[in-house]
Length: 58
Image (cartoon, rainbow, N blue to C red; front, side, top):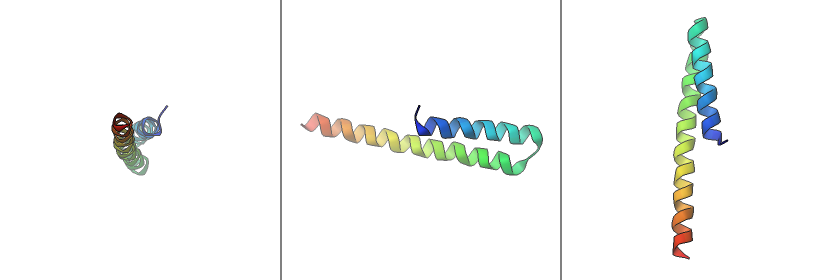
């Protein structure tokens, strides 16, 4: 499993628990984790495209 997926999943759980318990801090942390996961996913996709391009040039 990719780290981006783990961050997004962890963030979703934190956000849900924060909403359910009324804990605004946990909810905000969950949202931040989800954004972190999305950013990491973009980086992973960029690396994959760069590797593919490099391999195509060989």
